[in-house]
Image 1 (cartoon, rainbow, N blue to C red):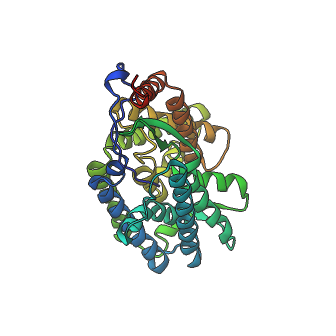
Image 2 (cartoon, rainbow, N blue to C red):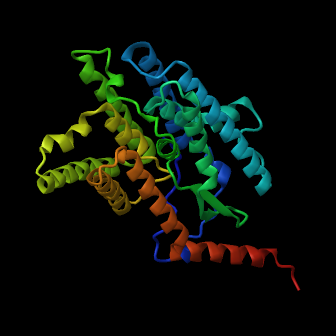
Image 3 (cartoon, rainbow, N blue to C red):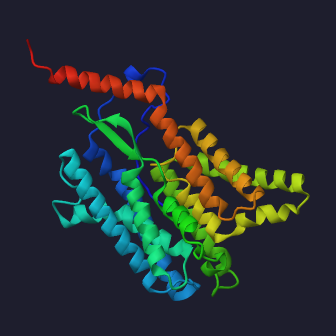
Length: 336
């Protein structure tokens, strides 16, 4: 999970010369809207983790979230320090304690998400690896999407950090699995079983309305997931309920409102949000048809990777960046 608020960069514009707008990186990175969403999300997932370990029935050991946070923090600090040095700029965590806290909010969210969703028994190192891989992916898998005020490319990561960390860990550690869905309501009963999902849905809806603008993606994803369940039931002669029951789980709700909607790794335009959600549902159905478990996480990784490749190879994006680099070279050329 990651919440990085950014503007629509006009990748699909038919007139790239009209979309070459310099971006003030620091202003975009620390925009009030983004920080508001990040802080709310960080608070919500922190409360959920405390409540999960104290009352709800989380299966992981108490050390798991702390190990995941330590790995996420450390990787984020190292990645930013190296990136700042290579690009000749100041590190975003430098200057004050407030800057450091703001900078660590995404790592905090991803670390707690990985620690909450993975179950590795006593192999805490595997969870720490997942958190570290999640944050490292932000620096390893990026594409240039715009130019700053100096004409230098601005890079954005294309893989959902938490989802990638979970995916790569599931592939590399056969003994690691996803935490059982019942852990979120293992120690609750009655009306509380209804109240908890409603809280997650309401807070997630508020966050996506105010901070991400991904409500169309959510609605399309839910609809597409239901459609693929109906299609698979018709083709395979299986009960319809079997394909729809994952939608009732707490993990599905978290995935829907807090992971697939990551604004840094999902499109902002309405049409592209719809295509993105349908693509994730399609790959989920494909993985299920091939009897491959953990299809939710694998499908999102595949779709975000495809989107990243498309952004990198998009003629419009490449033309815009080339135009910006040309303008920069003209500005830097000595006068005759």
